[in-house]
Length: 291
Image (cartoon, rainbow, N blue to C red; front, side, top):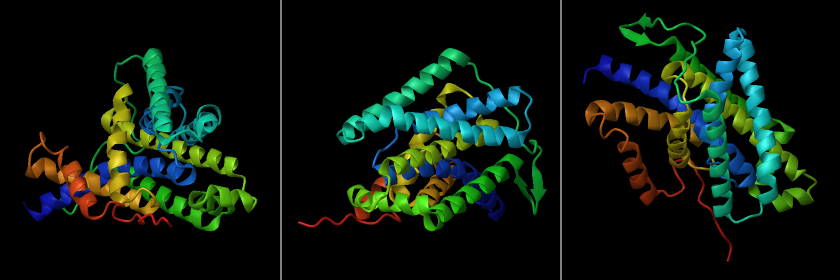
């Protein structure tokens, strides 16, 4: 493998991994705040793609479409948390998993009924003509995806570190009962954690749509997002980003080294090997229980 080919594959892997990273981040945020693993997050990505399609068909400029997708995603998260999740938040973990899985199926079913199964597409904000530099080809949409991932990552880190609501989310993630005794409105934290996560998931749908098209099966990206979240450590925001990027790179290089038939298996095999030696993931902290 030549250096040029390796660099070109790395560019492609980072592009794909950026989407996985956003999905992983969207999964980790509500899990950190409320302990709920949202298996419907993949359908939130699908919702974002179709929301972008509708807004684009209204001939709205891309910045307006971007803001609209974020707002619709956030509002959808608030509704899901308040109406469907909060009433059962104290239920056993398995019940919550099944509930979020059912929410995803409802979203996917509604999308299929309204839009059908025919694929659609939208254009990226900077066209599709590749940028050639130093013998390498850069897809403008892929560069935009990576830039958005970087901005979201630093934005989320700054939010958790410097804002009052972000600090409240960190406190609730450690001990919700203790946070409540300290005057933190835990239900408000839950609501906004879901709003942020679904906004990020919807953004991922908007960003990936120009690359792979729009169809009701986009939600399968959740498998790669979950893989990235587990690989990086389910309690780490930065770990989710690194894990998602790692999955994209591993898949891309595996497609060349072992063939497209087996490339989807390689990240899972590496994950199984990693979890044998480090079950908490690369950046996760081991849980300590007092007995």
